[in-house]
Length: 119
Image (cartoon, rainbow, N blue to C red; front, side):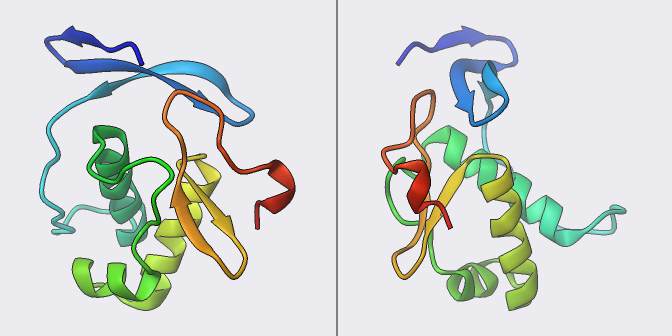
């Protein structure tokens, strides 16, 4: 995979289903702190998980931690963790297979899972 360095971070190619190919900057991951900023916690949680996926901390084709475990790790309700996972699915960062789990999508390439198995 090609990567480009810049003052903003490392630039890597990314393919998103339905959105085509574009590039993303990899920057150091910040700690998850919901704080007093306006907005929904699930959106901030999804953004933080996306940073972990793009940085490679959560490896492609590996299972995402279970929603219950994510809720405990982030100190949020199970519903918040489920909504954050749903946002990651909508962004094309994870793939959910019924009765199998949720897996991190391949960065910059095609998903190893056929579209018929998306759930």
